[in-house]
Length: 292
Image 1 (cartoon, rainbow, N blue to C red):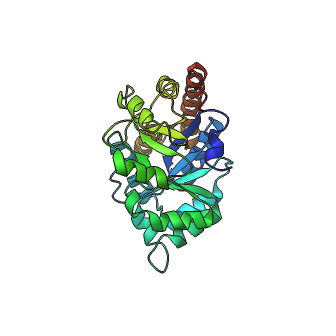
Image 2 (image 1 turned 90 degrees about the vertical axis):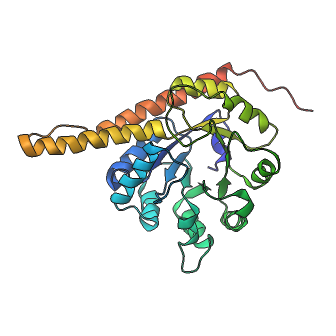
């Protein structure tokens, strides 16, 4: 299934987790739980030591993943070991893509990604104006290149992004870095309106943390929702509880705390809430007028 195909039957739910957070085996369980909860596409973070677009929640996930031994080579093994059928997108930084092969350039990374089942990339630090080598490699191996459109993206820069994007466009709901929020940004509606005439699915991310948020955003015209920090928070809380349990066990000799299955169950529950919210939002949206 291609990325655009994932939007064909209604709003797409696109969750994000950092691959290998907090360890390889647990992370496999967590990603698979997202598919059970209704994910249509899954964004997998390949950790980089300087995640400039991320807030503290995902920065900490990146640290845990790196401490657990995640590398580009291990990432590709991780993708191969996953038991999921939905499309996978690699979210990472251009340094890792560019320096992967024996010679600098994106082609070896893209070729390897395609061979293990990755369908596309989100590369937050790669400007559209400098994306041609990666775009060419993606075209060669049949992968999509997703770009982020911020609330401030306009004019020639917006046109350049929309010329290069494929799969879906990642609509940044608010300025700043990633992180779960308690409300929906007023900037979402204007951002969607600005790109409404472009023929590519629009998925909104940054700050979504509940089914109510998902409903509101899809009702406003989004073709999908992207959720990261709210899910990563569940992983972080389970990891903290497990580490505290380990400390307690040393003192008491008892085993307690959050095992990976309990964390996976909570991820699946929130995923289902988010997907259900998106579907409700779609049912409440007025039909698009016919274009002539």
